[in-house]
Amino acid sequence: MVVDGHFRDRISSMITGRVLFDEPMSMHTSMGVGGRVDALIFPGTVDELKELVFFFLKEGISFLPVGNCTNLIVRDGGYRGILVSLEALRWLEIKDEKYADSICIYAQAGVSLSGIVELSIRESLAGMEFCAGIPGSVGGGLKMNAGAWGKELKDVVKSVFIIDSGSGIREIARKDLMFEYRNLNLPEGTIITGADFHLVKGSREEIQEKVSNIIAARREKHPLTYRSAGSVFKNPPDCPAGKMIEDAGLKGFKMGDAEISGKHGNFIVNMGDAKAGNIIALIDTVQEKILNERGIVLETELKIIGEEL
Ligand SMILES: Cc1cc2nc3c(=O)[nH]c(=O)nc-3n(C[C@H](O)[C@H](O)[C@H](O)COP(=O)(O)OP(=O)(O)OC[C@H]3O[C@@H](n4cnc5c(N)ncnc54)[C@H](O)[C@@H]3O)c2cc1C
Image (cartoon, rainbow, N blue to C red; front, top):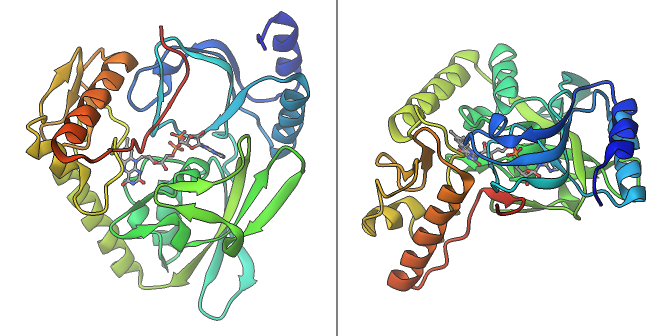
């Protein structure tokens, strides 16, 4: 379905937030690459979002939710359809509910993970420190089951609020959510609108110290001065992907302005004017070499969408 003038007017009239047509996604992805999307829209409220989803489904318009686009590559030919950014949904609160050993916080999908980490330091709430330095949003983080230092969002989430094809908003309890390594299994088209997390009362100094140590370790290990999408590949069970890539002699290998970081083998960095095609070509090269040399299929952690040029 082409998002033509008629649909453009309808979409613009349904939304109080920003609507960007023919938007280059290189302006929005953390990698700084990607072709044009038919429309990138920023619903201002959950009700708007709900109406839009029903409209897209009725009209057969393709759509995909996005958060901070820090784990996303859009191919150079762009994306035909609508990317729905949850960026404007930023409500974050400590809920009144009391549990024996935990405090519940609610965060809408557009809240940044670092925003929750900041709140948890301010309010002396332990449990989210592992998210320090992960640049994603709550929605994207949950969909990716983001994690670091042996913890994942699945360990702190209490329930997730979603919009799916048939329903309005539904709350799904943790026990009914199918989390996997870097994935939350949800039916296609499901949009996470927010989540409850349970954190525990802790010492502010200890939480702050943990966060500072994590940030320092990230600065030391990761190539943070260049644009990237974090780890490109999932770690296979027996050996970290970065180590395999290093052992294969691929650190520093370049295609155009995309480079396998010399600092961390599992990062591909944009040294200037890389194209999505350069990054995907590097990914293919790594996968082929590791398969040939070790018989291991490296799966990508980051998501690749859209069309080739
Ligand atoms: C420097 C750097 C360091 C990183 N370190 C880590 C790390 O330590 N651990 C880690 O796990 N990740 C890491 N990442 C990757 C990334 O930040 C995480 O995966 C993050 O959780 C993605 O969130 P996002 O909002 O950017 O999602 P996006 O990139 O916008 O989207 C990712 C996926 O989630 C889907 N999605 C987004 N929002 C929603 C929603 N509301 N409902 C349903 N689906 C949605 C998208 O369709 C897409 O498939 C790092 C990235 C960078 C650039």
